[in-house]
Image 1: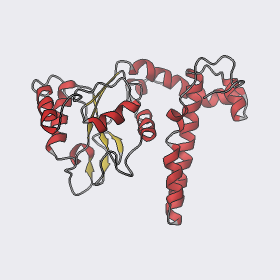
Image 2: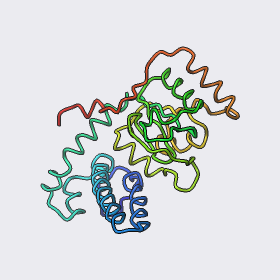
Image 3: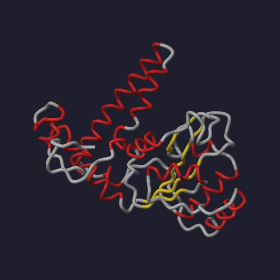
Image 4: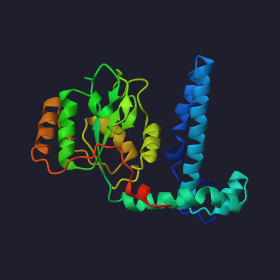
Length: 255
């Protein structure tokens, strides 16, 4: 990502799309707006996404690529002091999250076709037997429970959503850059242990964000074998999955 002359002390190249890939969806929403009110809302979302991407990229350049605040200042057209004031807190926060995230466990379950017909928290929206089997297995594994929605992406169970009719792989489904952005906002992108209880399409999408994710349903052939494996995982529950939207331990540390 960096080019010759950017920073002679850089350590290794960054993956630019990890910090800025979600901008594509924001730009597309602006272009697709059919009314002035929709365009204004989409532009506001784009502005927020750009601010977010700029901060993420700056933080990654300092922590991964070895940039100094003077390097950032030159790239942004501001002084070293201004860059330090703008980025010191995000850099320190990211360092704490990275260190503490090594012990964090996340378990991801898929959404489901069967849903309620009215808005509800994601943890209540999906009523099908497959989703419920995944939830029971997740309770056995323990960790922070995240639901992967084909439409909304990564969801805490308490997040209220509308019903929808969409499956992974169909036009309009959530993309990898969006998932990466969501994971970073939720402070789970640096989770040390990630388990995905889902079929191949959903699991493949998860592993584009967390290549180290464990996939217990790999090797099963069809729904009956997946349900049997989920039942086995849930046979002796030992830990209740935390279904509350939560601060990570690092977010509880005073800046």
